[in-house]
Length: 307
Image (cartoon, rainbow, N blue to C red; front, side, top):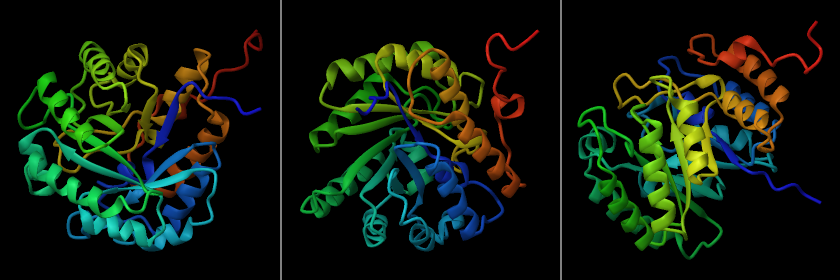
């Protein structure tokens, strides 16, 4: 009998963790990273992004990376796409799920994808119209700056709910609320999470936090208490948004898994294997900044083992 995990952890390190590195990571090292992570029990891994090489050079080799990991079966591999060209590229590589993204903040969306939020929704509508005949392709929409914008400051909850309603109207049933600039706090997280779940019970909501100001795990815990059951994380706390000044890395996946498992909440992730994978990845990515207290401290000794 299979065990139903109580929370779902999506590993985004190969995408969000690498996108703002100044040094290009080799195709072989990207493939190696994804394979190591897939062996840890993740049901879903964000393998990269199909974006313009001029915008983010790190992912100019996405087709080669996807070819190198095509034999991975247990984990669903996804990719971030900003437009219809990215979707077509993803389909050519055989992906079964894509992540469309846009910002509810006008300033951030223009800075990031050169269009207004409403223009992004129009683009999404066109994407959905094109891909719906292919019912095997799943779509998750990532709503960036849902907890605040680096240019405009706080984002009102009704603004976020308005865009959630528009997405639901397009038939989107999986959405992730993203703390792109690391501005979220537990009270805001709980308020937005509870309202989303109450108003849109047909939608599966996840959350994506950056640990910019040290509130990442606190926000995840409060989101869980509000009813959210899906969370993004990046191995080693890698990452940051290249279009969000000062936004440091994501919440470390291994710290999120450790917190839940210590609380008796199942994640389905092999934590010792994840820590071993993180150490191997850190050796390869010598120029990257790893932000993970658990990776540095290691797992605690078994209870009763200390004298």
